[in-house]
Image 1: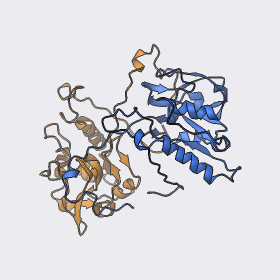
Image 2: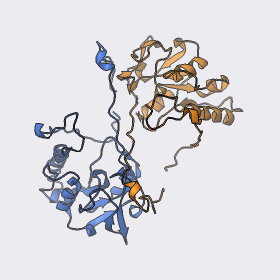
Image 3: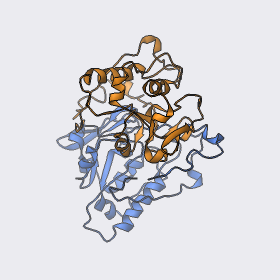
Image 4: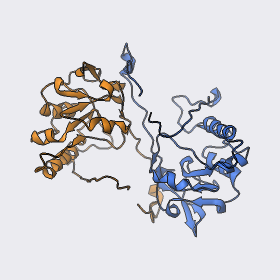
Length: 201
Length: 201
């Protein structure tokens, strides 16, 4: 791996009751709740004495597609940044509707009753705000699609506080692409795994 | 788009007889033959008086995953570079077998009778060699899986001429990831497309 930035790999076990089995549709059970909460917990431990530390927290996915400009945009996040996401919610673009630099609604079709009907890739949070709201976290008890609303509701009170990014939410800088599950049918037949002797670096 | 490098978008129509319909498996008909040949043709037109132009030709895919080091590795290609590809051919890694800096075989399980049993992402070609071999191209008449062997066979005579990259083919720098087809079921219901009013740049 090309170590031009600092990183920390964390892991958290999903309790057995919440694990998806191969035949389950991928939305049946909450996904990533314990892992994202582990990351939030790490931030709280790591920055507990760093009230002046600037930072922005973004919940990225390894198979989303990012325009690097996104990271420039969210660098300036005082509370909660919000922006369009491509290829999610059954739409070409799911996006906040903005007037006079304020979010006044969303174009979401899937479950539009949610207060913040957006994807996990569609918002970023100021680090100090996340630290200040000590209890803010994701939850395994909220219905499907409500993780984002659940977290953001613990951080701000209303749409007014959202900070639209990407040219007033007119620009797509992240796409919810999904990677296919790799087919490894021949690997199982090998006596020696194909990775034998390979090096990482 | 972030224009830090020169690029040219080309397009070529796949003849109707060769078009896949939605119910066909994606391997039924040759894919990308006319498009890659259009690119080769463009190179021949564009560099026809440039016998001193250095260059390397690589057939990338928009949904593969690349380590940027790959492009450093293939920069130095006198004839045909070759290197491992992750998550292809039913294996975790499909790779050339190398001894004393020469390719002596392949670990491929799928159709190992091919002379060069590798993926499109697993080789790169010196520009001048491609220009010199004026007839070299892909073909709609070769069986499934034979495009790479077909092209490389027109450029070099034997495995001996292959140039192993990525630490003697012990390092994976490209993965044949595939992106799922996006689900846009709500888009069809919209009176105004979700992209209305969005800007590109």
